[in-house]
Image (cartoon, rainbow, N blue to C red; front, side):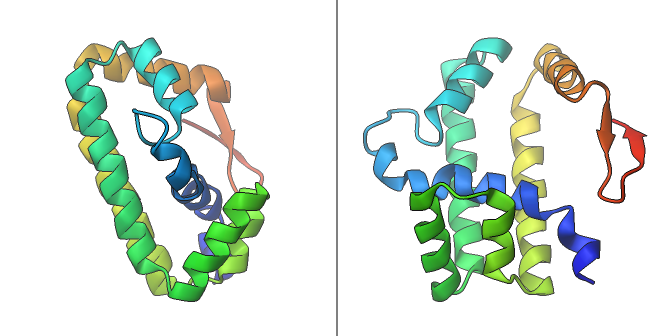
Amino acid sequence: MIKKFAFLLPGVAAFVLAGAPMLSVQAQAPSGGTPRTERRMGNKLNLSDTQKAQMKQIRESAKSQMRAVLTADQQARLDAAGQQKGKRGEVMQSLNLSDDQKARIRSIMQTSRQQMDALLTAEQRALRDQMKNNRRGGQRQSYWGSQRRV
């Protein structure tokens, strides 16, 4: 059963850890989440100020929803790991998420991605897809080692 959801762990870790350990940095950075990622995405996709603000709101909402799924102990471990800048996959495995937690986090992530995607124009979506394919080389390794077209 763990192998079935193992492919989700890096994505969940990236999403949760991108903002969770940055809580103190958010007070300093006017953009909210991870400033480097937001700057890069905003510059390459030419996001309007309105789009940037709406995406920030979606990310913050998703982050708080995902943290609400975690127990107090899991939140403490996540915060401690964020301070140490450990490997995200290892951090997520150390949280020992239940199947229900994984499903709820997956649902939150999917909803937030859909909301952010809806904010983009057709041209911005095409550019984002092109950047994804360039970054992945058009193919991605699945968890079991076979390649699949993205």
